[in-house]
Length: 228
Image (cartoon, rainbow, N blue to C red):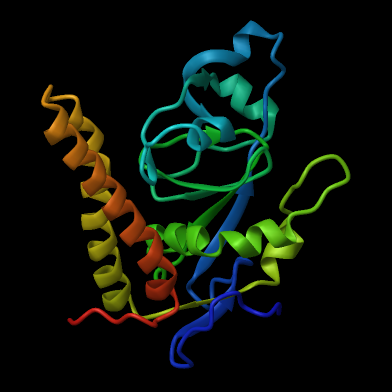
């Protein structure tokens, strides 16, 4: 087991990102695939098909409900991928490394993802935030001869430690409030033509985003506790 990036309380449940039903943290890990692009019958069907660039370049928050392209059942079969259930945590393993999203609707992915199905003792959104907080580790273990890439073997060696579900939920509620404020800011800016008000909204969005990014590793390591 690799040395953890974040030191967590000894009482927290420990495991790795490798599937292990007994631990109740990670049940399975999937990779995606791409149907042959020149075969029309594989494309423009009813199955969402996600690529890393879609979550790397947009401000979607953590959740993804739709994809730019879709594939058909025949395309899904030939790609070697599968339809992921809502709540699956999708981590980009290349181009770029370490972008994270949670499926909010059934969808498949291309081969640029490792997708985690959580067990009963780990909230999917908590795992997503945990991966965000551990981005320096992901960058450090990414390797490849041509471009950086994450491999299952490296991730499966990395220790994850999580609190009980009630404490996970408190952390998620707190982060959700900050996330909501940060995502709401750009929408409010579009509703006003007053320069001073626009600047104030922009500054508040920046402040909330900075606060979220500062507190995230502290919450994920138990250095900040939220009252029950």
